Length: 336
Image 1: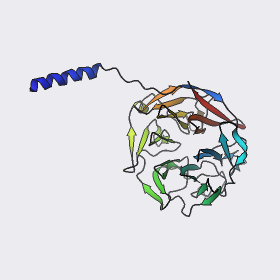
Image 2 (image 1 turned 180 degrees about the horizontal axis):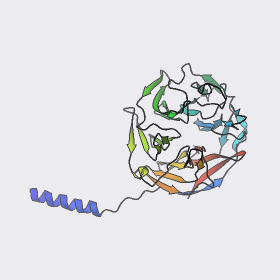
Image 3 (image 1 turned 90 degrees about the vertical axis):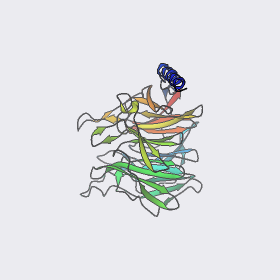
Image 4 (image 1 turned 120 degrees about the vertical axis):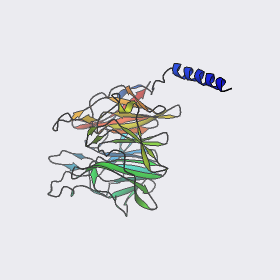
């Protein structure tokens, strides 16, 4: 009998060895130009989706003579960015680099910074959060500010009725890894730090799982992708080809998620790398993540290098909003 099991085990082992390697696959596509938004050109705006409405606002323009915006505009597939459909003005200070997440019919917007020159580097950074109620069409300031230090280039996402905000770069240029959970009835609570402190990262939720990827650490740019484990409020790194020479490695990439045949596929577009302290090199590479084997697949490049683009999804279609010279342009990823 033991010999029988030995032969059976050996036979199954040979089958496994002979099995063809699973190749990663994501929906491929091409980029098509869409309509430009009917708002002033700006850097680092924030975007959120609430009650199936895409809302874009805030941001800043011109570092020498800075303008900071507090207007939000809506997007729909038929008319693009609708000039006649604006949210009420954001009641907080205009800013760039804010983050947003949504829970139910409410969107939460906060953090960010301005370019105001001052002897105190943190004076132009914010910890306030504001709630947009899409049913009442009103903004209200949260009674409790973000508990971490002020920061820019943080990430945010929502999962299972709670919001999550963390990582980023402080006013003193310190790279951060602390993360916080927001529960509407009780407010903020600190959870486990992300596994690698970073700024300029990208976050998305696909197939019920939240991911934080890319960014820059004290040791340079990383391809590392980390999954959030909501049951334990901890993080788990993915060490597949994402951590090898295949896949994106940059900061300030845009992301969106499309759904095909019941599966969510995340995509990363653009971003930037710096080879020297004074060089900022935008990229045009685009990658899709095969969620089944958690491996990147290269797809059609973005039409031009883009950094700090804004990614979003509407009715299963992926879009990137980019700043192009003195105007903004929307691009649609049309799958085959």
